[in-house]
Length: 67
Image: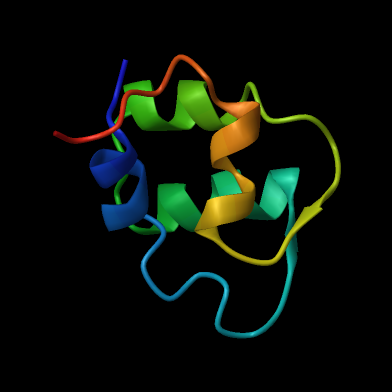
């Protein structure tokens, strides 16, 4: 399972144009070259709109925080 840092690295700047839905979050990460583990973790997000990274974390409890 990727870390929050792994996910954040592949979503840098993704929310600068406004909220993204689940599919757009996954696409944005893919465009940044995210590995399959990151894309799979993001696939666990429920449908909805996300305005920033912080809104992702409650929906990804298996993703660990950096120490």
